[in-house]
Length: 370
Image (cartoon, rainbow, N blue to C red; front, side):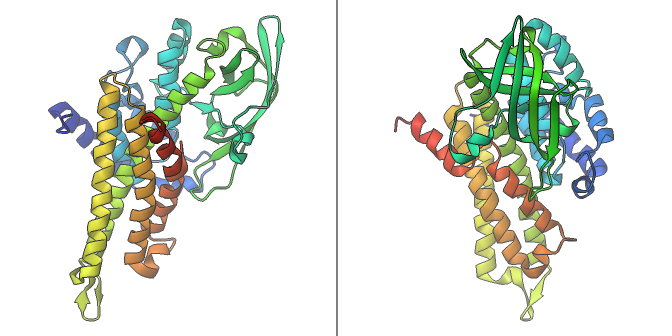
């Protein structure tokens, strides 16, 4: 694997960084108190710049590129904690439709998605999942060529702002994914209170009619597609966590260079230096594993093990690095007006999203034959 960026990749990274520093530097704070949880104006600007089309071919309105390009962009988004449904819409849902959708579904959904006109979110976490059970207990009734869906899904980001959902349900033929219009009768969502104020929602379907043409992939193929959605989402969050941790490390190093205690800069104390060194080591480990997994995925190799290695390390590092950052900052690290607490809360949410360290260590163990 060559981890050196090409000139095109460097141009992407620099352009994204320049835009976000100018347009979205304080957006994370503002979004926490807003109803939508993100800026539709920034979302449209991102679409105009072609960000929504990365990873999709031109025939569907895309701008080309691969998962390495996406990770470079997400790394910059993580630096500024950019809020919004980019990962669930563009990466999880968009790639699922591109890889498994019918030609009609691709033309209908991807053309709108790449223009920034569509927010579509996976709704695949059943309430039973939080108790350790993996079975879905939905009610699915068939009526001629339609399915009538009833059930609840948890932790669906930005569902209250979404136009469509990718809803996973179990039918007689096995788990199946359905494209559900949120404007249809019987679809409701409620924003949950979370540590990161990141607009996670509970979605409830009550006898929602879905035509057979809105099945994503083949009937009974839902488990396979959901596994891929989880992999793509996990890797995407590795990129976001990487940028977040790079910024935490930067803030901490800058702080210890100017903070005086006992008549000395605290950065001159060996204990502080070693803690910052540990933070830098964690960040570089996350970077290498994330880039490696993104490269393998972009080269069409099987990357399940590498993705889980990256997410396990990123999840663990997000906790360690942010806790050290707060510890080194002292009391100012938890003041609401200071950014460190903001990064800590966002890191905690990202640590758990699409599986924490223990979850992905289990995947790695399985991949190596244990």
